Length: 66
Image 1 (spheres, rainbow, N blue to C red):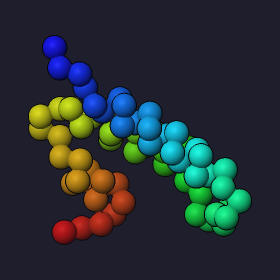
Image 2 (image 1 turned 180 degrees about the vertical axis):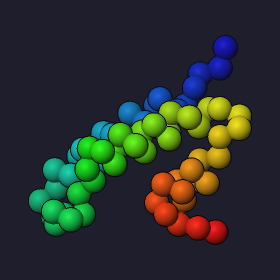
Image 3 (image 1 turned 135 degrees about the vertical axis):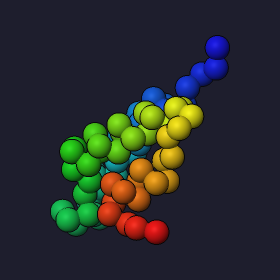
Image 4 (image 1 turned 30 degrees about the vertical axis):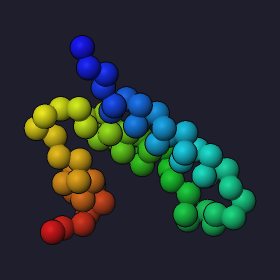
């Protein structure tokens, strides 16, 4: 049985965002909201699926088109 990386990436992403949001150097508009963190976590949890394309999903989430 292979270990999945998606849940690990999601956890680390949340930890990094929370730590970054605590920084006094960041202006209020640069902080990542809980809603944004949760949405991106959901994408990261899917990376182990064969038919999932993280790059495309992130571009779609961020509104960036090819």
